[in-house]
Length: 300
Image (cartoon, rainbow, N blue to C red; front, top):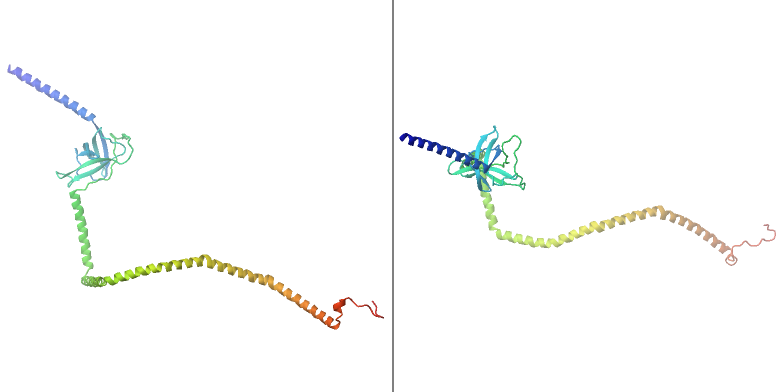
């Protein structure tokens, strides 16, 4: 009887194991059917990103990181398991981002953020030679306490070296000269402060004078513009016409005047001859200059 109970218990345990294994297999298959596998590749440091790290799409968690592996000396490959309902398309970009102060531990963690940066809504396809679609990556946005402290330390060292350099440059004489310059600058500042009212009055007078200068400058500008646009062209035209007049005087008027004077001289000689003839024979005025009749013994 006792052996029968033991056998029944053993059969029940085996049946329970078979049912549990079957249920687990069914659950695993169903869970796999609800998620899609994607890949991302990056050449930046992924310190703090581990398996089961969250994946967020527009701030909503859509599954976990499956694995992080080193592809080569420059590239890290990350396998993502994302809910099929997440709208991952060709416009989606993955960014490795930190949240909190540290890359590990309870004070912070590193996750993969998915965002849409374009309008291409086509689904991602599997490239030749790849096992799953590849999501493009953007520069990582990991700002953590340890990296910030390292950067502050590096900056502090740079400032220390700069101060050492300044200490070697600024000797006692240089420091004394700088102090004297500072004192002189302080005196100048005090003098300016004491004469603030005078400076304000000078500025006001200058402003009023500038308003008076404006019409003068405007009139000067108009005068210069008139000189350029009217007076100078007219003077040039007058000089050109004077040159033409001189040329005409030399080539036309003077020769004509010379010929006229020559003709007047001939005419004057003719009048002189005529006057002489009239004086000799006034009858010419009445009978003209026709030849008188031949006298006796005068031949034709």
